[in-house]
Length: 168
Image (tube, rainbow, N blue to C red; front, top):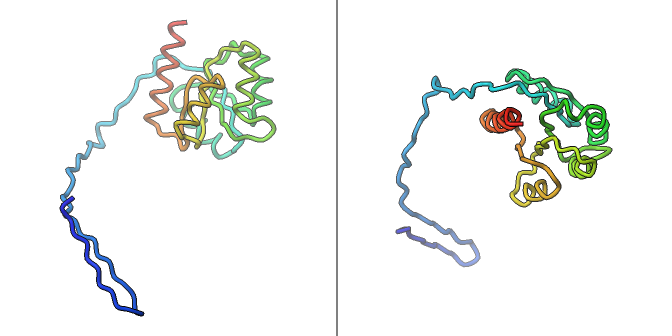
């Protein structure tokens, strides 16, 4: 990196290490904030939101409803299973938190899949490591959305399931 390292040391006093290397300014590309990309609403989805945090429920509900979708909320996996048993065909998508009391998202998904309910389930969690995402897929989840929810990522995910709804 074409740098230097120097050391100044005094016995019984201490040492000072200095590392120097040239830094070149990065090119900064600034997007025009007035040119926001809008993804057109293809079709409204009926979404089951499975989330134990009231704050996260509020944020997710607002984001989804502002995009024209209907949202039903359950507080944990057991409530989600009961709701899906009652009317799973009416839901186009399940957004499933992973860490919840009573029944977590992974166990709830396993149970839902054992019931042969094939409604798409997307993990909604802050656990965003690649090995976590692999585990979600192995459990039977169809996708992943990281918290905090980024509007662009939410839009891309929703469009995917809107297109899927149109095809089926």
